[in-house]
Length: 143
Image 1: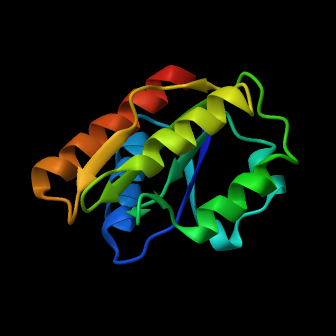
Image 2: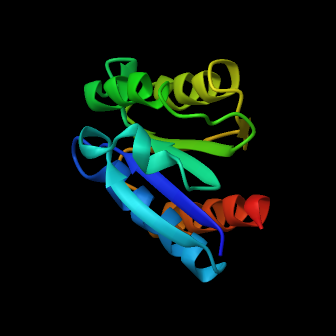
């Protein structure tokens, strides 16, 4: 069975809502999923997965600190050719999704699903449905 890890961090809960909806979409598509907060994730968590999905809110035009730190941790893993995707919530700008995407493409040489998924502030039910669809799209890419 295909396996995915969703590594995310959240400040006000919005990105966590997204992570859980993406997880739901993947599980509906028949993929094994692990959710992990970035502050607790390690490079070893990435070794037996088919895809790595990163989620971070944008706070003051940047990723949240725990996700920045985790990107350095990711350098210890061999991710070349694995599927990647990025998502996150934002208040006014949404740069974190692009930063995570560019890092996965350029530094880790991953096959990234673009564009990443952005949701402004607290996800609505329509936004959460988009998250579930995003999860299914990622699942389809690794099957």
